[in-house]
Length: 125
Image (cartoon, rainbow, N blue to C red; front, side, top):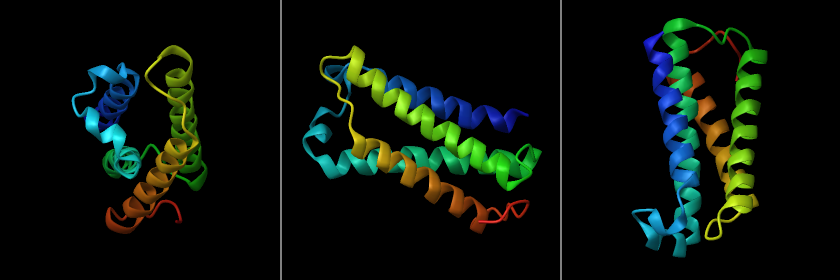
């Protein structure tokens, strides 16, 4: 079960990074470069999907397409919730639809990479 801690820690790090006030983000000049921000969103969620796939390789909790799609939808809802929290509670953070799109594309890419390279064949791509 210890491998399932890794994606959960990753989600915690995404939450902390996403909900920090904008002036406390260590690399503040990235926010000026819109495409770099989207790449960061894409990569974070791609890595989370891969981490869940890697953990599943050892423990097989996600044993069907339905389980995987439920997880991906749950992570997408998490992503949307984080964006809403940014827009509602932080003056210097914003709700961005493009961030959500980058997150979802990252999740799907991570899922497909997991299926291809980690050989999680209990479900179809």
